[in-house]
Length: 243
Image (cartoon, rainbow, N blue to C red; front, side, top):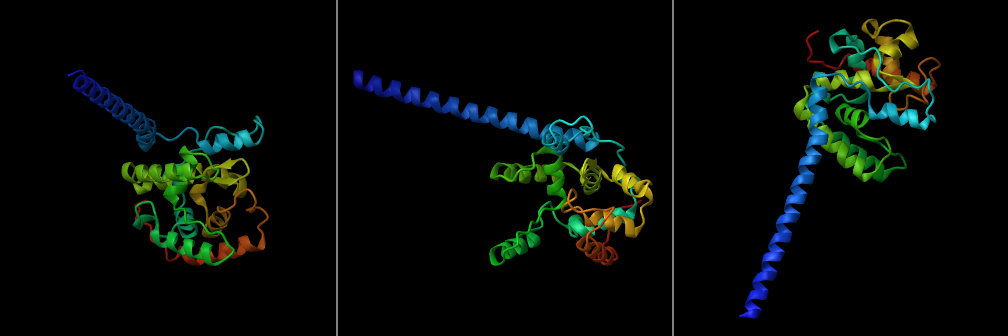
């Protein structure tokens, strides 16, 4: 009988431990969902006042006072030039309106290129870039890539495509210390992003892969080449948005 009681007591303890572990995992899952889903829901209707990218650049600069840590001059999508919308989609994610956050064709092509050549090619969609720039850090790491995928799923599920595009255009880095299309347009062309011409819009979109090294004011030859390709592609881009 004592042995039977010991076995019974041991099983009860093991069961209690399992229940506690399950509860801990469940509580951690609830916390994770709260700190990821809630901000995405808030930013569905409220414009982000700042982003992780802004704070990253501020830290990298050595906490320079001149560096912005809050977004300025937010522009609603209907007040952004359709030329810029088409240029950015043509440059960064031509299937933006037709995928659910991940462009699997581009991912497959990037994998093949990376394995067969010395070039390193990415396949980040506008949704993925928005998730990364608003919520996450920039350094490449498996954890960040995993969280980037999760936030991409969240914003694709909880935001409209128009909202994703609006946030993207207002938070993306467009030069050293320049964030968002309105400050960038006023800095480069001395007028609002609402009145950007096709040529101006294509030039702005052409530097997005490397906005701190590629110049809008003094474009390098490869920037001019990219601008020309974007201008040609813009005529083929269909944007199902009512302005």
